[in-house]
Length: 116
Image (cartoon, rainbow, N blue to C red; front, side, top):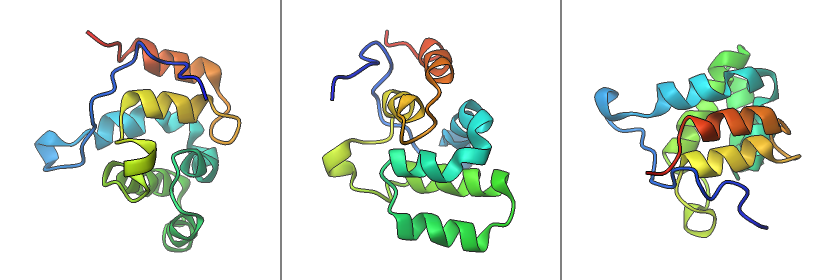
């Protein structure tokens, strides 16, 4: 698949200590997809069993989205095959028909995180 967002930052996002975590920014960026968190998780290559666990333990969609993005940032997927968490990968997932299917939001995120 061609990279639709080659101009977007590809540096690895983190979920380190509070001051070093990208979790807040990532969740804020995808908040419009809160109701579609499961599909976004699939597009980010999180295992369906992990998504089902989030669904079972978090009743609130916003908490599910937070848990999903935390799982993604802590690389709870095959990152060696699909790449480290980055704004570029997030844009691809948001744009994907499997994920958010939201090209406008993907472009908005991309424009806020350009390389250079």
